[in-house]
Image (cartoon, rainbow, N blue to C red; front, side):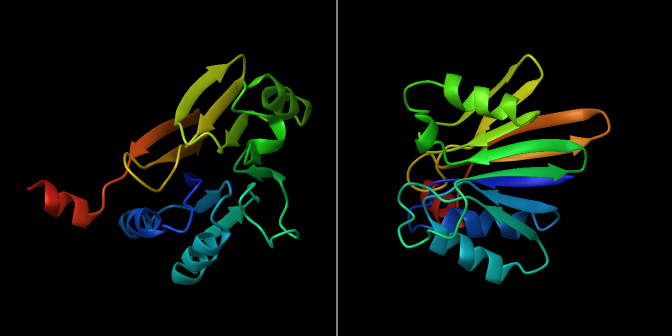
Length: 165
């Protein structure tokens, strides 16, 4: 199973859209908050892809959205959160404890706008960074019988590539 993971688009969905157009073979998209309108737009544009989302601290008017979600996808138990309620800007201890308590083997969070990919004693940890602005990034996760593989991808739009030439 192939997953794209986005966070923190903040009203700038261009990178998300171009990435989804290039990766139409993904099985699911997980959005980790702060841009629910952008998320809903992508969901409408790509109806053949499964979408999951949690609410971020800037997602005002989305009180019905969960602040954390535990997904079971293709043998992986995934703890998804934006991260603000776990104070991830001050460290990962609290969110890692919450993921372990939930029995997760993959932790996905955003909020810091800084991409992070690490592994800690049976727990894969991925922050896809921010999918907007300069040096936008996203996460790519492959789940297979062999295990979980996480990657951080630097995003470029075709406009940015044209400007670089």
